[in-house]
Figure 1: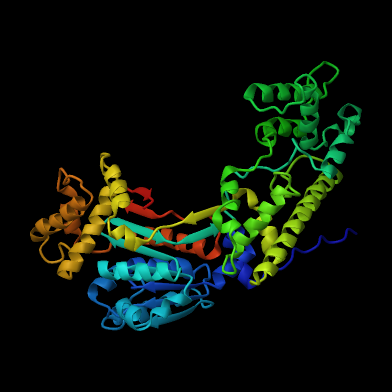
Figure 2: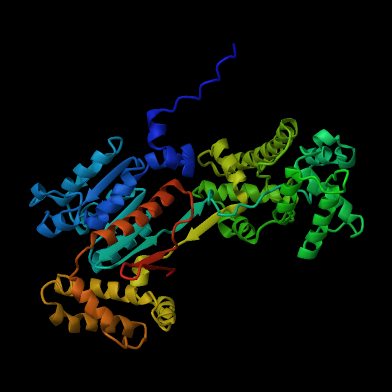
Length: 535
């Protein structure tokens, strides 16, 4: 009687709940999210949609700052408010229903305006991983953004007015180790094989391999041998051009066995090798963006306050200059391929062992730096993760929203350049900014009372903004008429789309995975067009 097949390990309830997102950012990403604390200012339709998409994946704690009472308009546009909520605090009511989505998330409601908190308790905002604000006035935007910039807390300013929406990410410095590029390059080192790999590859003689094993040779070996044979007539150079790589393909094809009629036998490993030539034969080099990082002043002039990222960059530079001989640490990841189990496992262990060896050297250098600076230690697992992704490190250096609102020369020139193009989304940025100015001056949204009567006043706000950047007035007033027609209303479908986008960006910042938008995103729900700008 055959023995029963082994049972697959039981998943915990938590892993079942978060299964799909764990595939995106892993256990360590989920742990970072669960340690995160998000602050939302104003539980509007947009604000609650953002929070919904942060609570569902399991952020640790959320705090809503909102001193408004629920009115009819809130109930009509916000799914997280009920008819019975009218007259009650909007933040507390929204929080109560949002937390029902995920009992594992903790929540707090603060019934004070953000201006008062800034004046009386500015340290309040230091506790948060990210602060997200919507429906706040221009003065509050300037004061809050400057304060969060000074205390180095990421800030997302978002708006939803009619069919228009936008968000602006303010972050002083954001290092991303796991960028998850769409097309991650393989790191096989076939042009500069390390000793263990070289010994393994040189031991193969394709012509002497038994016929039954011919179809199980790893394609890495096939390409290495093909390049060696090609180099015999090319002065040992490395194939770089398309013509040279096509010549290597011809060599690979010459390795393929033929039947008694001279017809090539279809062997999957050789087909894989032919498909991989363009990517696998990329020469090993130090990417310019990584070189700029490791030789930047942040990595060369370390202090006790330097972040772990810059300490690891400094250790990486030391490795490249010494043991690495100008090369990054090996990734240690082998792509899938048709091969015998013995061949694949042996090859996999060769790459993993060398990658672990490189990471161990860098970890020792990190420890030396930490000891010299007398700062907090850095986990070996963090160093290994850093080494694994050292080819795709990314640093975002942001700009201050308060500075942007001052319309300095650089910002003015940037906006003016985009406004020269026809039907550009930058027009919506001007309109949303003008809407903020109108609210500041009139304590209400344009078109809230008399759409026709507010057109001239909103146009004056637009003209003031355009004058500040030395731009001509809009040739038509269509966009201004539309903004007044909105009357400051939030359309739930627009807020829902935008809320999902903003939540994604907040999660990227908290988990420090994937590249967030840098730094302005604008959405036009009428045309479904989007655009990004960097101020």
